[in-house]
Image 1 (tube, helix red, strand yellow):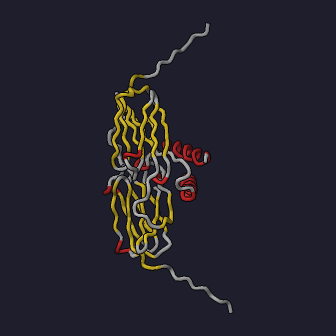
Image 2 (cartoon, helix red, strand yellow; image 1 turned 60 degrees about the vertical axis):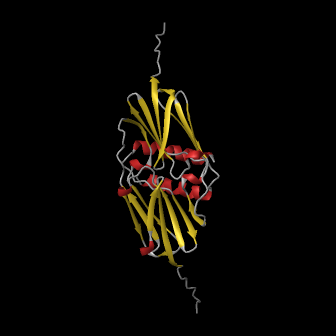
Image 3 (cartoon, one colour; image 1 turned 135 degrees about the vertical axis):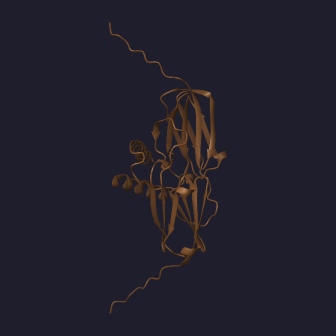
Length: 128
Length: 128
């Protein structure tokens, strides 16, 4: 899968040249575990206080402010997501019980658990 | 910077369709802090035991095995780097004191500190 590697390398160059300027989208996993939807969002090196999570009827949105580098020094390369404003809204194929949602930040991963409120009804119409 | 967003979205679709199969490159920051080079590598949600770090004369290489998802359930989307074999070798513009290197894993970020062994000599030749 050489093409993926080439695109990744190109992106990393773009990131390095635009640190702090562009908005980046974190990587997301979504699992259906019966009554709940579990969402994992990669946000390594962030501060918990800088992360905002919103749960909608059918989507989850996360935003975060960039983190100042700790150690200082002269940056030779800057690609990591914590250098950038972060924003992403992911839709899930279920209605969510918004008030049930809870979030944990561990090992650089934000984990969100939300209960399903049911599937969306679909009405199939006969054409008279 | 709309193009970056489009490339990111395309890549995330590719990741979701190739979870576990392709090899991914983690994001890296490199800082020059006087006597030392400090390298930060985003590896959220990994197990410390699964990460291997090698320090070369002028480069650092990191590899990691994919992590099995904890909670189980049915994956609706899988983009996160911990689903993939991870591999990246980054060069630095200094010779490194290989035996001085040490690494810490915290908040999903691998931090490597290595002392500089000096700059590369450059001989500029006069053409007789």
